[in-house]
Length: 168
Image (cartoon, rainbow, N blue to C red; front, side, top):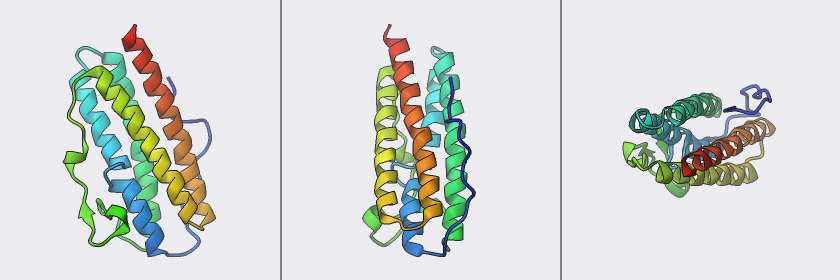
């Protein structure tokens, strides 16, 4: 199973500092539906599924590693935009910042619910990225978000494949 598309990631750079763009990316970085939430969710799922679903647990960690790369690229971009890439976000871009919380990680041990929720979370992440692309007028950031979306679409296919396998 492949966990990221075979296309290089763009160079991490921005046209200029922009706190509005940074705040948008902080939501993708450490918001409720974010790379940090995906990483911790997939790690937790690996822990609770490894005994009965070793291959799926392995796939979850591999996907989490791709999400870690997304987190790294977003963090560096946020920093270049002039903000501290702390694990914070703004709800609907309203002050004040809120801290990322482990409550964003669904606590579930049912394999079907886990995989279905992962598909929904990846779909929501894609929606958020596409919305942010529509608000951002920086070619480098748009390129980065489009590349991340390509991986997220692949993750949906991975989860759909896993769901079919356990449904047999």
